Length: 122
Image (cartoon, rainbow, N blue to C red; front, side, top):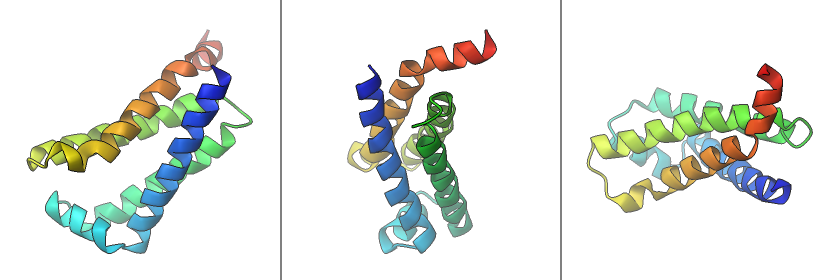
């Protein structure tokens, strides 16, 4: 299970770095995406920085596994909101797949590292 967690953690790390970086850099596809879901461009920048914060949490999680669960919760909430934003404007499921896939990976990471959270609180 540890290897599965590391693989999913690494996938999510690279995904958040790519999408967060492209949002901050103002990549054309990100600007168009935020226009199509009717969100302001300043929200794109904030979202990009939150994704980079998620990257930092995932990197720290290699040494402190409890951070994986906390970061999974943060990214999971962000990806749930992204999915809802796509649904709100009636985007096809194809446009929602990256957010949905990252949501499922974040949920898996929370469950795979739930014992770390329980040790923190129990």
